[in-house]
Length: 122
Image (cartoon, rainbow, N blue to C red; front, side, top):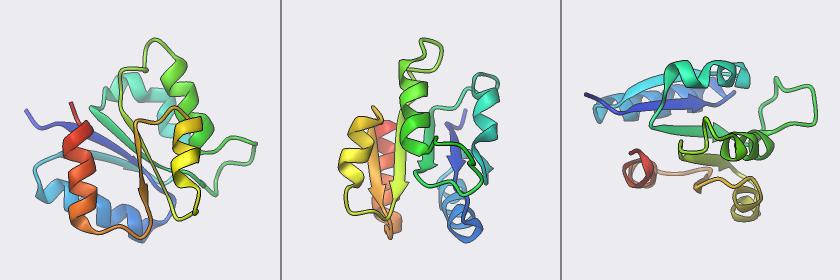
Protein backbone atom coordinates (compact mmCIF):
# COMPACT_ATOMS: atom_id res chain seq x y z
CA UNK A 1 0.00 0.00 0.00
CA UNK A 2 1.39 3.39 -1.02
CA UNK A 3 2.12 5.93 1.66
CA UNK A 4 -0.23 8.90 1.58
CA UNK A 5 1.20 12.42 1.47
CA UNK A 6 -0.90 15.54 1.99
CA UNK A 7 0.52 18.57 0.13
CA UNK A 8 -0.79 22.03 1.00
CA UNK A 9 0.73 24.68 -1.27
CA UNK A 10 -1.02 27.75 -2.69
CA UNK A 11 1.37 28.16 -5.63
CA UNK A 12 -0.14 25.87 -8.27
CA UNK A 13 3.12 25.35 -10.17
CA UNK A 14 5.02 24.34 -7.04
CA UNK A 15 2.12 22.15 -5.87
CA UNK A 16 1.87 20.42 -9.26
CA UNK A 17 5.63 19.82 -9.32
CA UNK A 18 5.64 18.30 -5.83
CA UNK A 19 2.65 16.11 -6.68
CA UNK A 20 4.27 14.91 -9.91
CA UNK A 21 7.57 14.06 -8.21
CA UNK A 22 5.92 12.20 -5.35
CA UNK A 23 3.50 10.29 -7.57
CA UNK A 24 6.41 9.22 -9.79
CA UNK A 25 8.01 7.78 -6.65
CA UNK A 26 4.86 5.77 -5.91
CA UNK A 27 3.28 7.91 -3.20
CA UNK A 28 -0.47 8.46 -3.00
CA UNK A 29 -0.75 12.27 -3.00
CA UNK A 30 -3.64 14.45 -1.93
CA UNK A 31 -3.08 18.11 -2.67
CA UNK A 32 -4.79 21.38 -1.90
CA UNK A 33 -4.19 25.04 -2.55
CA UNK A 34 -5.48 26.00 0.87
CA UNK A 35 -5.58 24.78 4.44
CA UNK A 36 -9.29 23.92 4.50
CA UNK A 37 -8.32 20.32 3.78
CA UNK A 38 -6.93 20.11 7.32
CA UNK A 39 -10.51 20.08 8.61
CA UNK A 40 -10.68 16.52 7.26
CA UNK A 41 -7.12 15.46 8.01
CA UNK A 42 -8.24 12.48 10.09
CA UNK A 43 -10.42 11.23 7.22
CA UNK A 44 -7.44 11.35 4.85
CA UNK A 45 -5.10 9.81 7.44
CA UNK A 46 -1.87 10.91 5.72
CA UNK A 47 1.55 9.48 6.54
CA UNK A 48 3.05 12.98 6.09
CA UNK A 49 1.95 16.59 5.59
CA UNK A 50 4.00 18.98 3.42
CA UNK A 51 2.71 22.49 4.07
CA UNK A 52 3.68 25.92 2.78
CA UNK A 53 4.18 28.45 5.56
CA UNK A 54 2.50 31.36 3.76
CA UNK A 55 -0.91 30.38 2.46
CA UNK A 56 -2.43 33.39 0.70
CA UNK A 57 -5.99 32.18 1.22
CA UNK A 58 -5.66 32.41 4.95
CA UNK A 59 -7.30 35.68 6.06
CA UNK A 60 -6.68 35.31 9.78
CA UNK A 61 -3.42 35.37 11.70
CA UNK A 62 -2.84 31.66 11.08
CA UNK A 63 -0.09 30.37 8.81
CA UNK A 64 1.69 27.07 8.24
CA UNK A 65 3.67 27.47 11.43
CA UNK A 66 0.54 27.94 13.53
CA UNK A 67 -1.36 25.22 11.70
CA UNK A 68 1.54 22.84 12.29
CA UNK A 69 1.53 23.67 15.98
CA UNK A 70 -2.22 22.96 16.14
CA UNK A 71 -1.69 19.58 14.46
CA UNK A 72 1.24 18.66 16.69
CA UNK A 73 -0.56 19.59 19.93
CA UNK A 74 -3.77 17.73 19.02
CA UNK A 75 -3.67 14.14 20.31
CA UNK A 76 -5.58 12.93 17.24
CA UNK A 77 -3.05 14.33 14.74
CA UNK A 78 0.25 14.73 16.62
CA UNK A 79 1.56 11.45 15.18
CA UNK A 80 1.52 12.84 11.61
CA UNK A 81 4.91 14.27 10.59
CA UNK A 82 4.67 17.86 9.35
CA UNK A 83 7.21 19.45 7.01
CA UNK A 84 6.96 23.21 6.52
CA UNK A 85 8.00 24.63 3.15
CA UNK A 86 9.09 28.26 2.75
CA UNK A 87 11.59 30.59 1.09
CA UNK A 88 12.13 32.71 4.21
CA UNK A 89 15.62 32.81 5.65
CA UNK A 90 14.51 31.78 9.16
CA UNK A 91 12.61 28.67 8.07
CA UNK A 92 14.42 26.51 10.62
CA UNK A 93 13.19 28.67 13.50
CA UNK A 94 9.68 28.84 12.03
CA UNK A 95 9.56 25.04 11.79
CA UNK A 96 10.84 24.62 15.35
CA UNK A 97 8.34 27.09 16.78
CA UNK A 98 5.57 25.35 14.86
CA UNK A 99 6.67 21.99 16.29
CA UNK A 100 7.13 20.73 12.73
CA UNK A 101 9.23 17.64 12.23
CA UNK A 102 11.36 19.30 9.58
CA UNK A 103 11.40 21.92 6.84
CA UNK A 104 12.25 22.43 3.19
CA UNK A 105 13.70 25.74 2.04
CA UNK A 106 12.48 26.98 -1.33
CA UNK A 107 13.80 26.59 -3.89
CA UNK A 108 14.53 22.92 -3.25
CA UNK A 109 15.59 20.23 -5.64
CA UNK A 110 13.93 16.91 -6.26
CA UNK A 111 16.51 14.91 -4.33
CA UNK A 112 16.09 17.07 -1.22
CA UNK A 113 12.30 16.74 -1.39
CA UNK A 114 12.53 12.97 -1.71
CA UNK A 115 15.13 12.68 1.06
CA UNK A 116 12.88 14.51 3.53
CA UNK A 117 9.73 12.65 2.47
CA UNK A 118 11.44 9.23 2.73
CA UNK A 119 12.81 10.13 6.15
CA UNK A 120 9.48 11.18 7.65
CA UNK A 121 6.74 9.31 5.76
CA UNK A 122 5.97 6.47 8.16
